[in-house]
Image (cartoon, rainbow, N blue to C red):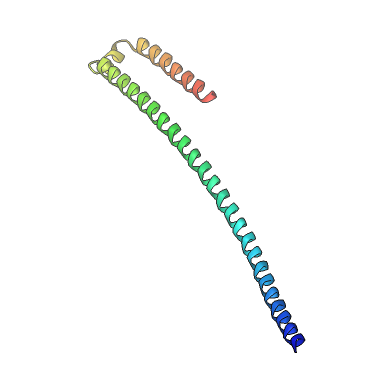
Length: 124
């Protein structure tokens, strides 16, 4: 009688042991999945941080370039205003009628200088 009871207890213990073994196997699999997900999240975080740094760098460069362009625009505007003030009261049609050779030479020379400057800028 004791043997049947012991066999029953051993059988129940074996079934409990098998159940705990299967539960442990499932937990190991869940742990592996969790580790993989954590590594993926850390990789995504590093990538996002690198992208943020790149955007910050690009924004700083854009801001610096905008300031530079604004300064160049103001310089050009001042030059235009200076030239308008200089040539605003000149009567070029009258000067062209009286001294066509003088104006033509200066126009050709000025045009050549502008084209040379454009060529130098585009050659860079």
